Length: 180
View (cartoon, rainbow, N blue to C red):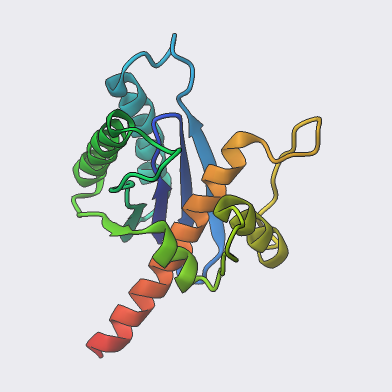
């Protein structure tokens, strides 16, 4: 089984797929409430508890995590945000190591989408394209909408974790073929 994670300090997407590609779990861990989760360590504890639940229920053999952003893009994340995200990514990676005793593998969002056959046309938002691709191609992937008809915020994190898990499965398949 493969665990795919889209790690964020606000909402972390978590997907488990089996060897046949069936989605066994596709959820989001919401840590936006500053009263309940005032620090990275409180957020990490919440993620850790969910990962421990997953460990008790599923026989995870591979862990794939979306690489945190490494570069600045105008209008996007500041140095402080990138640093915090990289720290949290490292904390959750360490938690995975502690639970499963294996190093996670990291995939960039771009390469994960490419592996899954998702093409983002120039000028379009990747998250919207990914969501539509999954809704069109994954009958098991069902989302919740706001009263205005937009996907709820956590749905994008679920979608991203599913893409990471699928790309991880493709990567494992390639590695198995290469080694035989």
